[in-house]
Length: 172
Length: 437
Image (cartoon, rainbow over all chains, first blue to last red; front, side):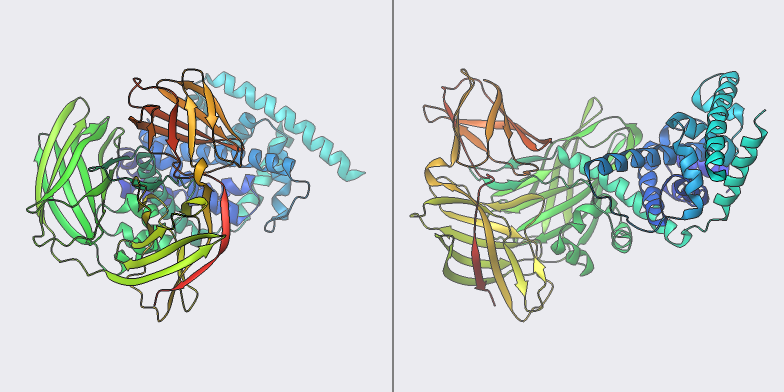
């Protein structure tokens, strides 16, 4: 079965195909989780939760070709929700306890993404980390390609300011 | 224009791609995610579970909505290999007795079905013992079912069915081709059927039509006998006395029969941590969901409380232990409300209870205790002694408080009304330990 066929069957409600679909994209999903979240444990938990959400909603996917991007977006949304929740929890707690070891090499990416509004995090991630075409993003978001392009430019501009600022600090 | 930024992003991407991934555990998480999704689905249905009572029988009910259950993969796989059982994984995992029943193969597969038009009902299997019967069934349709719900469901035998509490799922389908449900029958007295042929009679509302099924089936094996331990031991908890009459161990549940002393100053509503402990320290605690006991019969002080079963284990020693109970002063074991003047006239000492709203149709109360997941009352009595049935009850957390909302079956009654309490968050504590064997 090729990926399209798996997607088609999964959307139609075939549970075996749904399992195969998640297995096909598990690497992309875990990598996405790790772009946002702290460690492997959090990423695995995210994968379980994304499986739950996808299982409940898979029948709403219209284009089998978009199943992968659809899953990635669920993952990004989940991660963003988690980050917001953690912020709230930290807000309440005076002492923040560190759970699990954070992968230091990914901190830069997480901080860069965190400097963006949520919608733009998703846009940048889909375009540059999952190589989703502008035309497909436009279709998924149901907006003209031109709008996607101008949003991308705006986001890159924000990132430029961020990287420069960061670079500046490094040189001090 | 943004070459540098794009280059930087590419760098970050390749860093991310070099990171090792926990792939070994990934498949497990996907499988447990699927099991959890199915369990959630059946839990949503269970939230609307309806409970019927035959005759004047009343039961102690606890509504527990466990918000998140982390399903163990190995266990999910065992249960998922039995047809029709996936939605029950979480429920079974909450109950050690049910877990043991599946491990010991005490679940009996049936597979009897009937097709009416597009819809097929299949009795997947049953668990039968002297204390009750769980009937697991599947409703399947060749067309997507937008809504499907049980209108009536009952089970018959050549001899009359014993007095029982029956709980079954409410609304179940939501744009799907098939779903699984369970009907749980809890007998008020131990019962052995001479004839193991049963018939399920069900009336389902599927989309806009009514579909009736009548499915005869045979349970292959006779029930395993319950193990009764007669104790008759009088004990004391914080000055309140009661007799542990007996402990009866059956596969589906353990019944602990208690008789309260009429002279107690406080009315014990339920035991928080009643449990059995064996010589190795293994614990069997209360049934977490659904029917948790029988009692509350007017004028009677004998109650039966259910614990998760250890029928299939063989401990050398077994103790019944209790350290905490819900209790209110005898003379305060009720709420009194006037639904016309919207006044809460009386409630027990302890946490704040507020009448938020009232009408002849029902009342809304706010209890200043977080997450108190108990159903506090089953009926109301009006000023003339007439019984008012509570037709529905809502319970949810609201910040640090718990919201209770009973609605009444009728608006023709005389104020004020009294709601007898079966649960309340005021406690007594002590140390009760009785040797069972």
